[in-house]
Length: 414
Image (cartoon, rainbow, N blue to C red; front, side, top):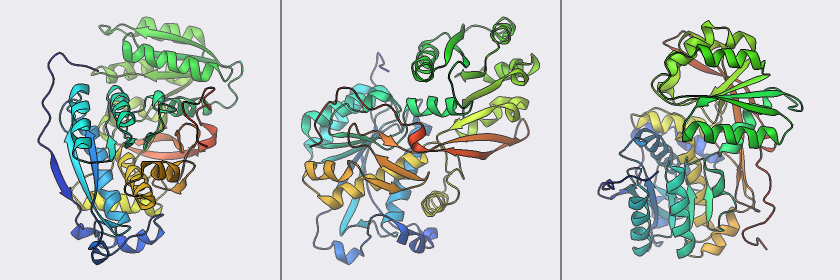
């Protein structure tokens, strides 16, 4: 999104990686890392690798940017065994605040590239990610987008990759909860806004292509009485109700859906967002099926998830929705610069088709379009209306929710 008055970015902070004092126990777990770590002495004859990170440290998306950065630093700690050195190279993160402003982000990217930085990552905002990706392609530098979920990053240009999931995978995960979608009725409940209509369009495109009949109930932003809309849902008798909602009236919406019998009449699915949002479902929380990109514990306590969690806690933080996106980004950067610190073509070749273990399970960078194939999760909340704990119901396999291959590849992988 654009703003009429650009937000100034914060001053750049160069962060040389240091070991976390309370994370010394990660060394043993890090032996499972797909990249080799080296001692500080091994880096003495090698140039430092600078990675430019553009993400929100201020503005409305700052909490998401904080999660991403925490995961990035945890990934660096894990892969380097706490030394800040990977593959014989001291790694330095150069962090810029995009303040959720595309113009600021583009200027940051150009400034980083002007300083000789050839590895760039980050951003939560999808519109910003698309613009930074264009700058990366123009200057032939590697870009690994962060939590931005816009599908169009796939097959955009050969220099652009992603470390998070995309919208298609979210929606396909929700569709998997009802099995074969052929002939099934899906209703999208959303606000009558750009966000809501985009979700309705996305569900129709993804689940409609799998055989579902998709309709939508759009609610005016000013609505306070949800009775007419719940009546429409009950009359439609859907096999699946997909709720896409953002705003301060979420608790009122879930209360209405619960009291008026919608949650008992059909399967209701929505996205599991950040930990702070769990109480918004109120008493209805236990009746909702959640699609989840990630929640603490979703990875089953594998070595990467354990290492990430330990490092984030040692730094005084809390693992949340987008923390794995930062951790995964560091794995991808490490794999790229271990192939070459200066040849972007070698870096691209190393990443294309690469499968690796990570926080959520097994990831694969699809060579044809750079989609990141990964698992997502079905989850439920247990507890009470004010204190909820997410629990894993099942993991949804990467191939089950993989975006379709592009009909017209944007570049050749040969």
